[in-house]
Length: 286
Image 1 (cartoon, helix red, strand yellow):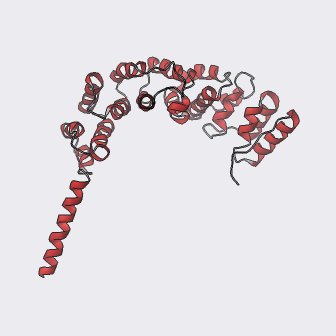
Image 2 (image 1 turned 90 degrees about the horizontal axis):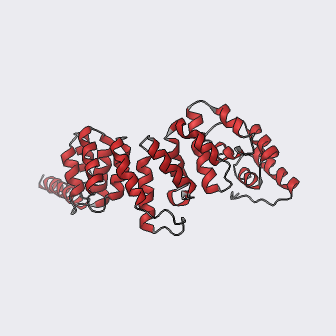
Image 3 (image 1 turned 45 degrees about the horizontal axis):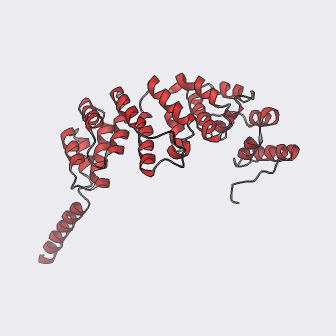
């Protein structure tokens, strides 16, 4: 019996030690379940607590709660300065609430980055900041946000932000941004047309306007919508993509079709390349 008691006490001790060593991992979750905004704010501001296990999850929890009290806390940090090491987390969480009060502070943060530089020249710290701000803007539907996102697209910063991240932020703006994105399909730079096409694919698929994507395939200025079709963002018949390649497509389109994993599209790409004297290579490892 004494051995059982000792094992029990030892087990409880180990649990306590584990809880302390992990920085009370469950605390942000527990506070979130209780809608304890002051508790989450206190955790985020406790610079002695573990950053990854306590402080960042506390900020994320505030964004997920989305109550007026949680929004007010996040907006206050945006306007007056985030707790140490939590700037990027606050950008993301504040934007995730959809509170339009976050627009101006996030755009100000964006303006503080020297975005005239190419993606290769932007400092690593600014790259992380840029990524976080774009993540935050993703949750905010507003004409000012649309303008800022299009500027990032035009600057060719999709490699810094990640084209999936940028296209998702653009797509979140909905059909209102579609005409501007269609204009970007005329740009042969894949840092521009790929995120634009992927965003349009998401927008038209969600709106049930797959026919619009199919129509864009036919035009020399907009055929690059294919980049949002071959990734599955919008569903269009493969034959329409092949017809586009053969009528208005280019070598980059053929190259991308060769790497879709679709036997029909790959065969069409090889035939187009042979006919036009291009050498294209697969990126897919057998």
